[in-house]
Amino acid sequence: MVSYIRRFPRTLWLFLANLPMERKLIVVFIFLISMPITYVSYLSSRSTFNSVLVNATASAGQMADSASDTIDRYVADLKRYTALPLYNTDVQFYLEQEQTDWEKNTGMSMFLSYLNHTKEEIVAVYLVDKYGSVYYDKSSGISELFPEERLAQWQSLTESGVAPIVQGRHMIRVNAGDHREVFSILRTVSSVSSLQKIGIIVFDINISLFKGIVDPVNAVTQGSTLIVDDKGEMMYASPDDSGGGSGMLEKHTDKFLQQVSGPDGHFQLTLDGKEYLAVYTVSAKTGWTTMVSIPLERILSPVEKTRNAQVLTTLAIIAFALIVATFISHALTKPLKSMVRLMKQVQHGNLEVWLHPRYNDEIGMLGSHFNRMIIRVKDLLQEVKLTEKRKQKADMRALQNQINPHFIYNTLESIRMLAEGSDDPRVAKLTYLLGMQMRYGIVRSEEMVTIGQELDHTRNYLDMLQIRFPDKFSLKIDVPDALLSFPVIKLVFQPIVENAVFHGLEPKEGPGSIRITGWAERGKAVFCVEDDGVGMDEDTLRALNNTLTGGADGEKFGIGLRNVNERLRLDYGSPFGLRVESEAGQGTRVILRIENLSHRIED
Image 1 (cartoon, rainbow, N blue to C red):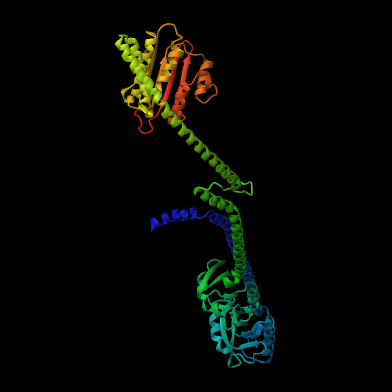
Image 2 (image 1 turned 180 degrees about the vertical axis):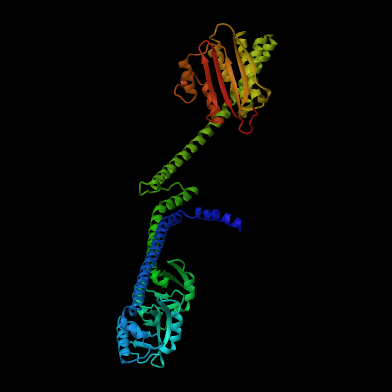
């Protein structure tokens, strides 16, 4: 598996590299266009998603805070109302009065009616006197209440102190067989003079109070609101969209409450396969938790529409880019395809082709160079034909002229034999050496010889000159045996030595010497032909070296050194050849470098 993963990038690269140029350009264009657009679309969608989520969270948090504050103020008002009996002396008196008469009933009814009408959502207000008698005032629509069923519970709740107490959501029986959901605010009524408990005041508040508070919250947030008291009991849960009860919030109250930590916050929760954003706030006054739950799909629905529009736009742009890239790629590669087609024709021998570039870009320049190449190939083929014809003529002349050197060599042999018969050893030796010189050029028709053979030929040449110039010069050869078998083209040393004799030693007064040395240097063979003749001045030396490197003063110095240098450079390459060093009156050194192309020399 790991090896496959490692091979995959290379396999993909080879696949792309082997595609036609037109498809490569299409792939590149689509990649360069689609990647930025896709990345920008992704960033935009991500930014929009986060922005919408943050805004929805902030808005829901503000609405939850507002609803919680409204509930706090409402409960605070009710708690203040529970203190009103403390400031009404008649009520204080009636609560301590044991018997019930018309005046007590009237006074208590008026006071309770006043309290009952302070808030629209109050279902009933109760006053329990010191002796357990219950007086109440009820809202319209209720004909009968049953406070006696709840008296024991009220006494139990208020026996711990005089502070107001909130009783959570519960059911009360009204009109014999009907029930209402309410929450209650209770308080012990104490005597102002004796501070003894003289009664209980109770407010029953319709649970529909919360609907009026949370409906605007739900309308703005498009969610549902849950209100839980300080004991973890649900006070109110918004009905679901179908209107069939409190729905999801009531069903999963515990799961929502498990995520609550701190005075406020938000979290995401998945319930029944749907994701919800929940924002909550915990009242510092009542300890009640107000929580707004919003389905994420409602929050993100506009984002999804925007994202879908971006996806469609991106696909449309990529499709348009594909069309444009195909058109441009075809336009760019069409000249190349034409050139490839013409090249195939040239490959099969048809040189009568011509490319017509339409533009002056790089492809147009390539087409122009292709046309020039075809013209040059035609010219070269014509030159090759002419050269072959000249070569055939030259071969014929060489075959014809070969008779003359053989005839001269045979004639020289006859003269040598006659000289030996006439007891003239100098003529015989001169004739013999001249014959050896001609034999070296005629018999050894192969192009390559060895260094040892070249040096023997050079010795024979100097022996022949010794007869003409007796005691004028001497030759010393210092070449390692390892170089003697080194292959080299013919007639390398003899022209250099000849140049040293006639231009260096002959003009010199007195005898002179020539020394040939050789050594190996970085896989190359280096030789030095040095004489102690008259040398040359700097201008002459500079002109000679310029001639050897391709200058135009070649006729001034003859053809000996130039011929050797050109043949060395043709056989071994331009870095090789001759270099001349000389000083006037100090002699001349000619250094040549050659290389065995098949066997490297060990230094």
